[in-house]
Length: 140
Image (cartoon, rainbow, N blue to C red):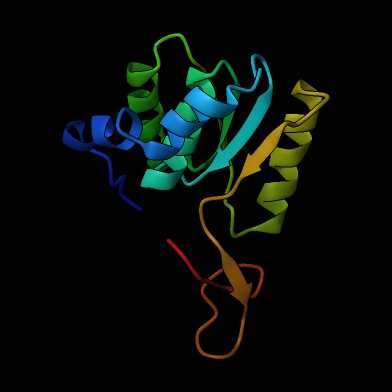
């Protein structure tokens, strides 16, 4: 999957994000050093979630493929230079890959504040099996 982000729309995703402004203005939780796991940072939703968490001081762990998510990681680092980001290679459609990622996360962190999953899956209902664990991709 190619990142949907370009230099032209990064500002419109983060700076003008109504949700980010609302969180910043009204809620302003103290999330410094809290751990956020975010998937699908190649999408606008995943990118905005990771960027907002980092801007508010959270530690962002990106789950995804190093080939796809490396571009969005680099853009996140440009947008939030002081942000704390880590990319863990993980195939979200493969339970073995996810178990390896979970084990790695548990070895690094004792507590998780938020898991933001940017895509959904539904049980396989017939047709072609398109992911390892007998699920069809619902949202990409």
